[in-house]
Amino acid sequence: MFFQKLKKNKCNGFTLIEMMVFMFMLTIAGVTFYKVFATGTLAMSNVKSRLGAVQLANEKIEIARNLKYEDVGTVGGIPDGKLSQTETEIRSGKTYYVHSSVVAIDDPFDGTLAAGTDSRPADYKQVKIIVYWEDDNPAKSTSVVATISPPGVEAMYTGGILSLNIVDSSGIGIPNANVKIINGSVSPVVNAQYTTDSSGNLFLPEVIPSLQTYSLQITKNGYFPVQTYAPYPISSVNPIDIHASVVNASINQKTIVMDKLSTINLYTKSPLGEIIPNIDFSLAGGRRTSNTIATPPLPVWSLVQTVFNSSADGKKTLTNISSGPYYFTYPSGIQNDKYALLYLDAAADLSNVFNLPPNTALDVNVVLANKETDSLLVTALTDADSAPIAGASVELKSVIGAYDVTMTTNKFGKVYFPDSNATLVAGGYKLSIVAAGFTDIIDKDVTINKFTTQEVKMVIE
Image (cartoon, rainbow, N blue to C red; front, side, top):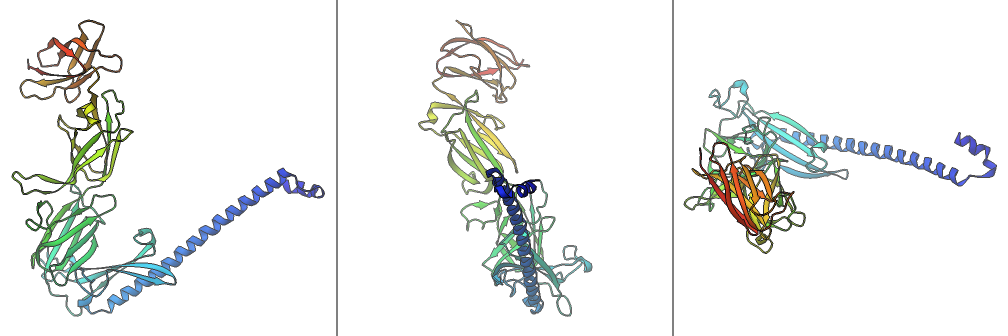
């Protein structure tokens, strides 16, 4: 209809509105054509890159097939050989990244060394070539796997077997974890990378025997990285995860635990939930990597004691950190000295320690009280062992005046006055505490002047 109108009025020319509508339609058509063209061009480029990667991978496999059997391996790998672990090649102006790995396979068809039914476990070698056309991007890669058998009979058993199990803290195996193995004390030197199978295992026959010298570095996206350390006294501490050992003609098993990354969101607040900015604090904890040589030994954590600040928004976020226990310290300082630390709401007890589970974003409220404000912190404890009494009913009423408020102790046995509905003023008060199973405390005299604390021991009935 629009174009009919144009034809009818062609002698009169275009109006401004008609011209704008025409240009809008032309723009929509142009943008649509450009998107279709760009999408098609990108798809053609990916197809061309994939074809080049497949051709390159097949070439590398053929090179491996034409090597002597004893030379089928990677430089610094297990087994050692003449293939490079990583290469970069340019074909038709396109850069390709080639990753090669070779492992000896103990095929269960003729029994296995682990079951004691095969004394020659190196049945054949498996060669895997991965070619990326965008570095380390699995979506833009292709792979080829080939098995190469020894000439005549299968190879005689040499060295030992290194069996690595990479699991999380619940004991579930972690598949496709990256394992880097380094050993500079054997000949040839080992410097190789592998990935765990679907059960989190890496099984390597024909490893050169060596005692506590195989360094392991385990990584995977979304997991806290783990590594082994040399034993004391080569290291100045006693590591939890010591370098792996390989004994000749035996299976050497080692289990490494790694967990998903976690986050801590720490907030500095008043008991009434008001933001308190610019508070300094320190944290230490996470994964326990080793113990000191001191007596008694002290833990060495993945996060050594570090000072942080809650900034103007009263918040500090720590990302990509290890799960485990974290130890909170409230140091003195110009801003800190204005406030008293009451408790951490994420702690399990009255201590300043909280636990961070794997794969968790944990909110931790650091509850602080202004020392210049007229207030009262009541802590109800058992007389027998000073354990906190949660759920106790605590009434505070003024000797002169209308203040009369009742609140309930939290899991730490603590309650803070005033609440959000009334304001305390300095002076005399009566404190009463009632808890099931304990003798009531009625009208205990308390004098409040600025921030005041009152610890009450209750006797079991």
